[in-house]
Amino acid sequence: MSILASRQEATQPPRSAAQDIAAFVSTAAIGERELAEASRIMLDTLAVTIAGGAEPGVRALAGSLEPDDRASSIPSFWGNAAYRSDDAALLFGMASHVLDYDDVSMLTVCHPSAPVLSALLAASPRQGISGRALLEAFIVGTELLIRLGQAMGFRHYALGFHATATLGAVGAAAACARLMRLDETRTRHALAIAASHSSGLRKNFGSMVKSLHVGIAAGNGLRAARLAAAGIEGAAEPFEQEGFLHAFSGGETDRWQKGLVLGAPFAIVEPGFEQKRYPCCYMLHKMIEATLALRQDSGLPLSAIASMRVDMPAGGTKPLIHPFPKSGLNALFSAPYAVVASLADGRIDLKSFTDAAVMRPQIQERLRDVAVIEAGGAAQKGSDLGSAPVTVTLTPHEGASLSRTITASPGSLEDPLTPAQLLVKWKDCLLRTCPPADEREVAALFEEGLKLASHADIGTWFARLRANIAAN
Image (cartoon, rainbow, N blue to C red; front, side):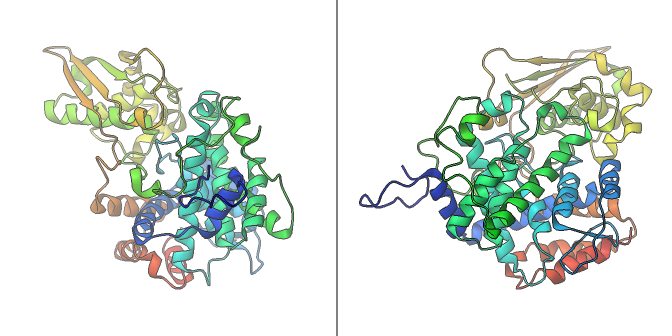
């Protein structure tokens, strides 16, 4: 069965999954609705990438890279340096994910935009590329990343793989192949090369390596497309027949699922990507929403609370591996910290995840007062996990317990970030990197970025963006 929306004629010989995927990447038609949504998503991911450049891990990575002054080099967003494209992809990728503020797709429990956009930002110096071409490449790359993860199933994540990293290499390769206008045959080779570059272990959550995974995926995807363009050939069928699906699902599946069709609809519009309201693991967002609501409604400070309880769905605590964090990176995956910090500060934002904020004595001494209870039974997966309720219960020293349940995922279509919230996030991220930047120009860049599909040459817009922040 074809995995494309248009079925092959009965008289034609059967096509492999790789052939169908390559045809989709090369020729998929992209509608105006997809382009408009991709503009919003790309701006959001670009903002958190720029903000991530201020982090120590990203600065350390930049210090390890050799600047490059050739015309083909890719300029950094954080100064005057430029780099070889593969180094730029590594740097942009780590920056895009280091704050854990980038978007999520619960269809696959991954961050689809970060590796794909990072590869595209490093694919060329940007002059002469239309906004539409960039957005189309982004859309097909994220679509393949997500649908490939659906075909493989949740077993991949349960085995300990970081799905954003493993799927990201293939998605990035698809996006770069589309931007480079590779034909179907060379696109298929690019995907085969990328499939052998996929890597990343969930064990590294809470460390710098988690975000480095995204840079590795972006660089490997870009490299795979360039190798294929140069004539390097891969397997004819890298996904099925004991290929990528079999290996990364632990042998659970070997075939693309029946009824799973690329681009019908595109995941970017249905069900859409979840854009983060808080800069931390997405499994913390519902408990943060619930805790902040309880604090606002009750007026009770942390000192008035004797104990706290979080009830999570089965499988919901899987990435929350740092109950007693000792750094900002640890705290991105800490349920006790999310609850305690929400009560202590009445907010969760970028300032919440500094090492100093996490190590405050009044925070550390209350972490053990939070009980995180995961429901029994089989772990929920994908969208089922995303729509499962999370309940926070606070027990004061005096008075009755208070509870709040959140079902809709913050940032999802059921509870989306408004245009005003997206603009605030954009400004917050850019001004974090360069506080002296002209706030009016930063806002104007956002409004113009929403119309990126109409830009004949994105070079001018990106040059203005960099001019506003690279002086830092």
